[in-house]
Length: 129
Image (tube, rainbow, N blue to C red; front, side, top):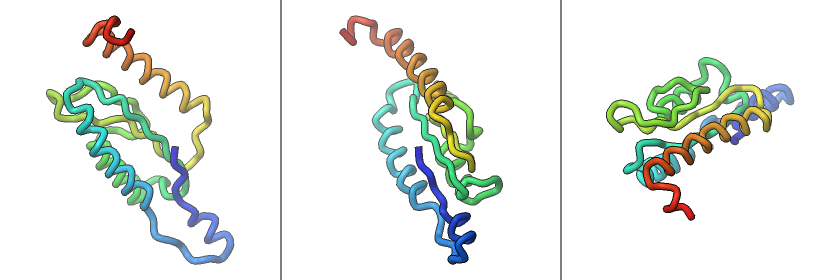
């Protein structure tokens, strides 16, 4: 989970705004590596959470996240490939308000359980013993 954006606090303190988006650019670089590593699989069990004023509605930073999510809907879980394996979207949960531990745990547990079933089905349970 990444908190991005302090401009709301800076403005309240009478300080100037800062540039946006550095953490999101790093996320994009890491995402390329993960997609490459899991290219042969039919699932992409990736999830990322972000919050902060940089993720307010209509933010250009949300546009960057949407691009990384291959224009899939944000705040929705995508586990299985779409489009004959061309889209390994991943799941991108971003909003202005912080995520609770319970919200994140529920989403991550769902992705983890379905991923384990996928791998057991593909490789067999004995492969993991």
